[in-house]
Length: 592
Image 1: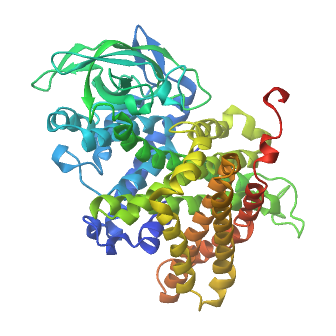
Image 2: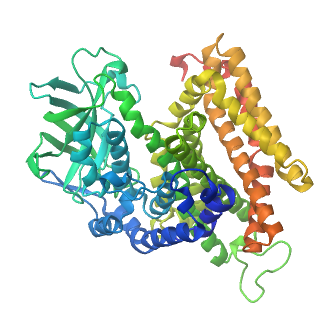
Image 3: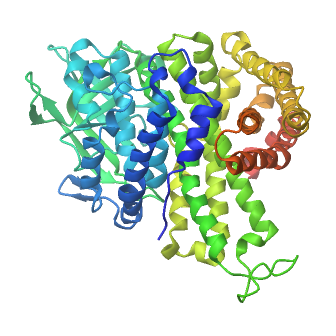
């Protein structure tokens, strides 16, 4: 049986030593003192470790069932969802006008890490609802907001996003779902959607589907797509539930992981829906959900890996195998614990250095979203737009790798279902696929985000790195261990960008063939920047004699490991990019 403990000390370090959130000039941030955020994270951590984590295996083994058109969630899920609602956790960073607590997004994201790490499948129900809430909040009419948001904030009603169809995944221009306008201003929605997470279940009174469909006059491309609110139960004028809408679950998908989440085939047979946002502008409204969801999926990538890592560390300390090459570490026992062996240490350090860097990057991303929203800071908005495909793609790829490494620590026992490690691997795998497969994230990064605003966001990122290096160049130890590796990695990233500029127009395949490597190169540089900032923060705390000295020294040692052992991967990714399209495109399609 696996366990989970909330990494609150490290989260507090990121929030207060690194981001210094209570000192930021943003609305609500002045209230985020360390004692306040610790109380929130303690309470969320208790719910995560005591309620959600024990249900993780239950959800995996039982899964969801479809009985006479009704989806049943695993044993204990409904009671846990009631606790989630009653504790106000679904409303943490939502608008107070609709029953939310109005906290900054960074706090909602931090709590979300704890919930996702302890039970990813369960947490998706409220996570998707939050995305649907955000889309309606941003694009809905006053009447739509009043009708749907209060119940969605409390998760009495949950939400979904309906994009994919059997023949149309990434290429949404091919979707066939139709929306026929009615005299009363509504539309009749007809079509089938697949892979709809939390599409139906027994934990809420209503499910509010946001559905992409084509209305007359929109044309054939994505420019003709509109977004519609399609509730499972129609809502009466007084807010009570009315008749069942013409939407049903055709089937539950049998999946590799996240068995506790109901992934549905949804059939719309002339279901009544209402336009959300502008006609034929549905992609803009949907991307309000998608961008938030992509940051949340990046979080899932490292959060599940965090839980896997914790169990791997415990096993490595307890499992006796072999003897240390430098002498017996456990002379009274028949063997030494696994953790004495250098290769196990390498494995665990790979995980630890990634996880702590990933947490810093995700929290910084949430801070940038807060700055963009609360201060209308365009620079922050442009920067998080640039970083979103990196956060989603890199953190989920490396998160899955980390979960596999954690499983590896267990050896053969990690392959046995009894230990529970395979669930972390199976659950984390989907994060590389949904909300835009990682190959598409890489294409978006290279094909759109790099050139956005005339390249200003990427140039601002490089200037940020230069400023960080300049600010600490007088510190010899920091310079050798952090600044020089960061400078070298940043040069690799700049060289890759220059290659795309020089070759991309002449041969688009040259840029697209290197896009995935560029996403990973960028991810390593972003984590290198986070580790440089964390190292500076840890050294400052040590110099001032604050807090737990061992914690800060451990932080520095972990950062040095990342800079020495992981960041050099940027040179490999650059070499691959500069090899161009020829090695990738050499074979004709019929030679595979």
